[in-house]
Amino acid sequence: MSINKLFDISRRSLLTYQSALNATSNNISNASNPNYSRQRVVLAAERPEYTANLSFGSGVKLDDIQRIRDTIVDTQIWSFNSKHSFADKQASTLNKLEALLSEPSELGLSNLTSQFFNSWDKLAVDPDSTALRNNVLNTAQNMSGKMQNLYESYTQIKKDLKVETAQSVESVNSYLEQIHTLNKEIYAVKASGNAPNDLLDERGAIINELSKLANLNVTYNQDDTVSISMGGVYAVDRLYSQKFIVEESKGKLSVTTQDGESKMSLNSGEIFGNLNMFNNVIPDYLNKIDTIGQAIYDSVNSVHSTGQTNTNPTQTGVNFFSNYSNGILELNEDLIDNPSLIAASADGQDGNNEIALQIAALQKALLIDGETITNTYSNFVNKIANDLKTHNQNTESYQLVLNQLDMQVSEASGVSVDEEMVNVLKFQRSYDAAAKLIRVADEMFQTLLNAF
Image 1 (cartoon, rainbow, N blue to C red):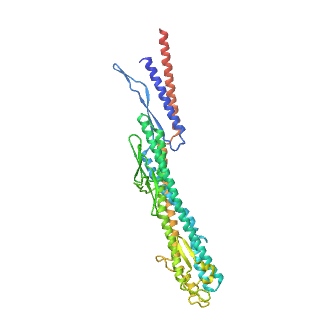
Image 2: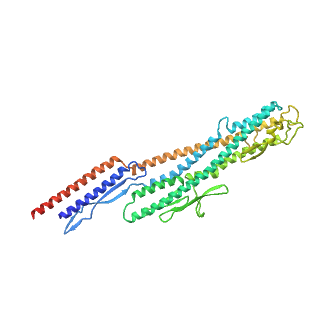
Image 3: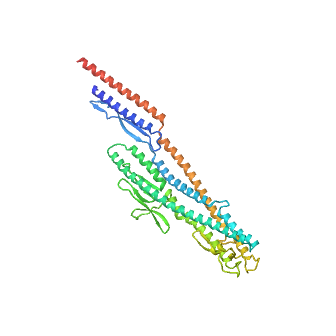
C-alpha cells in the first residue's frame, strides 16, 4: 500500500469522524427540543482497492445519518390528538354553558320559577293585597330575566363558536400551505441525495398541530413527501394545497373547499367539536329553554285569562304574559302599570282566590311530555352535567393514551445525553487515531525523502 493511500485513508477517516461528531453534537443540542428526532450515524467501509490477488481496504465513510422515528406511533398520536381535542372542546364549551345556569343557587332558573309559582300561593292568602300582587310581578320579572339571560348567553356562545371555527379553518389553511412548501423542499433535498431529517421533523410537528383541529389521513410517499386528506377531502401533497372556508346554511355550519365542491366529513378534532356544539348541542339546549318558556306562557295565560281582575268594574280575558319568543317571556305591561289587573279571582268576589290557586298548582302539573316544568328543567340541567362529565372523562382517557404514546416516541426518538456523550468519546478517539495515522504517514514520507 502506498504512502498516498495511507494519507487518503487517514484523511477520509478524519472527515468521517468529524461529521459523526457534528451529528452527535446536533443531537445533544436538540435534547430539549420536543419536535426533534434523534439522528443516528451509520458508518460503512469504503469500496476496497483490488490489486493482483489482494484486496486493500480504503477506509471508512459516513454512509447515512438516519432519522429515528416510528411512523406507526405518529399515526396513533395524530388519531388520538383529534379525539382528545374534540372531547376537550366539548368539555370546555359545556363548562361555560353549565356555569351560566347558576345551579343550584338562589339565582338559578329552577329557584326563580319556584318563587314565581309560590308567589301565587301567597297571593291566594290575601287576593286583594297590592304588596302580594307586586310580589307576583317581581318574581315573574326575575324568572323571565333569568330565562332571557340564559337564552341570550347560549346564543352568544353559539356565535362565538362560529368565529372560533373560522379561525381554526384559517389555521388549517396555513398548516396545509406550510406542509406543501416543506414537501417541495424535502423532495428537492431528497433528489440531491441528502437526508432532509430536520425538514421531516418540522413537517411532523405541523401535522401534529393539524391533527388537533380535524381528523386526517396521512400517506407517506417514496420520496418522503406526504399526501394528506382531511375529513375525507384531499388537502395537500407536493404539487397541491387546498383552501377551506366555513359556510352557514339553514342555521348549520360546515367546512367546505373554497370552490364549494367538497365538504369535510368530520368525526373528531377541535373543529368538529365546534360544529357539533353549533349545529346540534346548543340548538337542542335552546329548544329546551323554549319549551319551558312556552309552557309557562301558555299554561299561566290559559288560567289567568279566565279569571277576574280586582278592578271596578272587574275584567276578564286579561293575559298575564304578552308574548314569548326566543327566550323572552314578556309580562303584560298593563299589569305592571296596574297590579289590580292581576286576576286572582274566578268570580270577581272579594276574597275569591281560585285562579291564584290554579296558577300555583301549575308548578306540579304535567305540562311538558308528561313532566312538570320543574322536572323538565331539572332534566335539562342534569343532561348538561352528564354530558360534561362524559367529555371530561373522555378527555382524561385520551390524555392518558397520548402520554403513553409520547413516552414511546421519547424512547425511540428522544435524545439521551449520556448515550450521545459516549458516542462523542468514541468518535473523538477514532478522530485522534486517524490524526496519529496521518502523523505516521508523514514520518514515513519524511524518512523516504531523507533516504534520497
